[in-house]
Length: 118
Image (cartoon, one colour):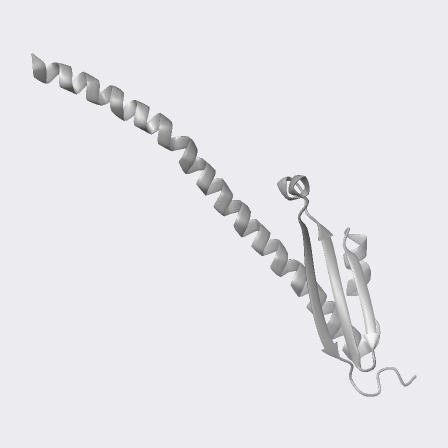
């Protein structure tokens, strides 16, 4: 008879342990996914800055910057001597917006000789 009582208490104990552990597990999974999405957005914005700097340094103008601005990004292009410095900023959306997180990418590139000579 004692064996039957132990089985019943064990099943209740497993259920309560599951109820305690499950929310923590899901929280950890969502935090990891949020970190991965944030890293992906940072890489994406950095690649936009790199592409704008590359195009500007080769052609002396950029169409990519216009496309980034039209899609909601802020683009800053600073030329100092033969160096172009591009900064792209995108406001975070969703939970990143609530946390006040902006994604910023920067890139410097040397302007090709003769590009700005008219």
